[in-house]
Length: 371
Image (cartoon, helix red, strand yellow):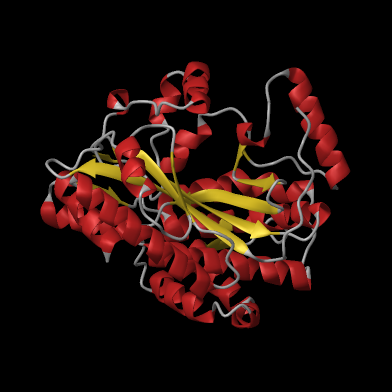
């Protein structure tokens, strides 16, 4: 299969995808109601897109093309309201969060669609363990070489995106000690991690052709990279975030990514080289394990710095770009989250400490999603 031509898209437009939990309203375990929710939604009009995911207890919402933070907020609110209304009709709940707190992977059902069945056949039990919930953000790029450059420059900010969205401390009833345990499930898949550093699109096409020639890869969806090109959309897709507990936080994180991308595209503060990736896995792990309390290593200076401090310094650096994008309000709200260490993983842990019951945590996640 040949790689699709890189489509034209306006620079720095963006789109947001969120994978969400469907739970019953008795014990708040996951429930395989995606097909029913989609059936109810098919009769209603709303902005954006809703589609199934790999297991029947998941559903994905996606905005259309957004230019500014307010566009994302409006579209995500509309999608949330439509989804919550459909869920109420079926007496099920919808929740954010990167993992369900106590579900058992072996009880999941693969959604009845050819691609999902093929993935289940290939990956075995890993497919059911992929009942995890992420936020993806697409950033429009005017040309393929610029897309690859942006992809690799953004890679040093992967710990920021993980820490800001981390919302998966619990797995199968246990506090994992991680802020984002979700990404540990992604690591198990071949072709996960970072994209290869190639110089231009022609070189990337040759790499893709070599991979398809091996029979290992049939299309871009077979790459589970942290950031990957999406040539059919003319975007790069940032894929490391947990699904936040609210659409507001999801829109703020998207606005932060857009603002960092503008700074990188306009000012071109550095050009990525292979040695920049020497600390990539360490920085990524620190963000997953400790969230904003983790430490990142600067690949050039070798300075060790708390992730929260690095995020705040970056927000200062990109402030004018956020203003130009009308995203400065979103970044002000995120700044307070960072200063107060008020992330979603912290909220979930504090709630569990108070309630001592994970079903009650999930119930309140559903309430938080509606707000």
